Image (tube, rainbow, N blue to C red):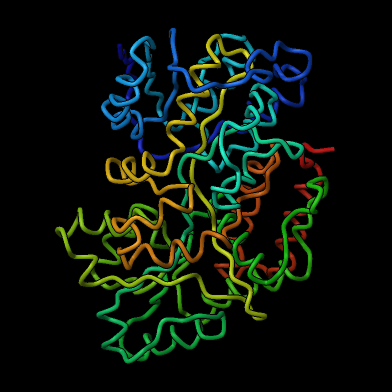
Length: 434
């Protein structure tokens, strides 16, 4: 049996980090001393039974309802209740539920805020032997760890790569860049060919801008936080150099500090106003949706993000996981559904249904994924993908960094000064990890 409660659909996943962090810091989470029925259980191969409640962000939820028909058929005695939660409300709803103890059995978590949510202590460790940790891309699995213990099953994953208008680049006689140095030369060639400000950089000046900087920082062998996650290192010299490089692209006229914003990326790429820039693997589909099926195959190329000065490759990681709540009433069925959705063949089917890319490496060998030239750089970048700092205060600190980045983009302050300011504010907030 399958029932669904629907809520209104929203487009973009945004977190409720402050509420979750407050829950953690106030000690109101369910982690310490709370019932841990979902943790110490063995999951066998018998069919799931009983009522199973599942919270999924809008978008995924609409497609998942029909997709789970096979699971329901294999587990005829389970009653699935799927709740479609607006993506930008999921974390708030979960945080409130954890505090009250009235939780679903299973929920999805977005990679951007996963660490914040897991830090609430409201989620159960993954039972031993449920899945093979070696089957997943390392960044996807590492993002589920709390004190070295996995607390979620990776569900889908991607790495942001660079897309470019191959017809425009070929006409300009340019070659897509593989390094920071080549990026500047690439932009100069395009500008000379009549394409002013050809690069599209993240100019939202928010946590997503900070996430983009995080990739550049890792390309320069730096980090925004210490290895033990207890200390912000935002103003380290490697990070200043990374922001200086980013700022130089605006100072040299290679990118505009005013756009494209997220919703402008498709029309700007379509018109050729933007020739190259970073984006997620959904981007070719967005362009096809706007311009007709096959437009991306004809006009678009993709490359791994350019490497830093010493050849280090890094890309932004994104995706989602499935987590069982500590207070779940039916953890056995919840873990069985999470295990089902982590199977490579099921993940390939989910990609064909909804477009979310698999977290299991084996699934990427299937022709429907392996033969897509625009996905090849995504797979190449995934092992080098970096998630945002896995601390509960990241969203707040990331927003501060993003705000400060605007001052660099507009030539109002130096990279050194703005990162020093961001460091001071971040230290006042802390990392949330002791």
